Image (tube, rainbow, N blue to C red; front, side, top):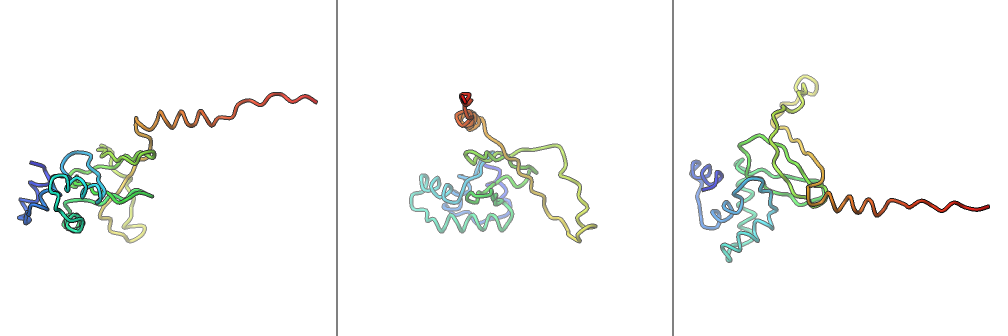
Length: 155
C-alpha cells in the first residue's frame, strides 16, 4: 500500500474506485506526472475514468496538501506525491524528467521577515542539468556544430 494511500485513509478521505486508481498511479518515488499522464495510466486500470474526475481528484489532493504541483518552466504542470519529506527537484533540460533530491544542506538563510516583511511558508529549489540519457546526445550535437579550421587564404 502506498504512503499516499495510507495518509489519505488516515484522514478519512472518501475513497471511490476512481480516486483510488488516481492515488495508485501516483504511488512511488520520483513520480512527477502531468494530469494527462495520470489520466492515461488511470484509464489503463479503469477504462471508464473521466478526464474531469482525474483533474478534480488532483486538484483536491493539492488543496489538502497531499500532492504538490511542480511547475517547470516551459513544460506542463506535474504532480508530486512526496509532500512529507523535504526535498528539491533535479530537472533534465533535455527530456524534462524530474527527480527528487534530498539534501542535507538547509536552504539559504535569508532574513525575509526582517528585510521584506514576509512570513516564509516554503522554499523551492530546482537544479537543472542533463540526465545520463540526454548528456551523450547533447555532447555529440555540440561536437557536430564545432566549426572546422578554415584553410589558409592565399594572397
